[in-house]
Amino acid sequence: MHEIIIYEAYRGIEPETNRQVLVQIFRNKDTNEIISSQMAYRAANWDTWGVPFNLELHNPQIKEVS
Image 1 (cartoon, helix red, strand yellow):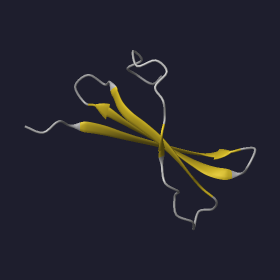
Image 2 (cartoon, rainbow, N blue to C red):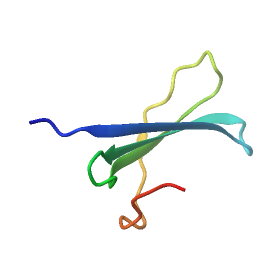
Image 3 (cartoon, rainbow, N blue to C red):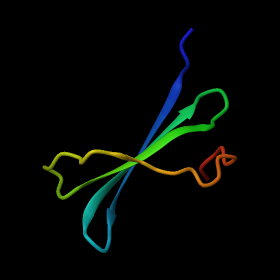
């Protein structure tokens, strides 16, 4: 049996550099626990995203984003 993962993607602009930011969060469907999260940058809409880097989970007890 396969585990179902929920994928969330959030995009925005970093004000200091005007770069675009992509944050990706992967959650367990049954527990809503964050399995992994990563972030990547790009300079413009036409550009490709850079190599994502892992984000550290400061409080793994947090299960939902409000």
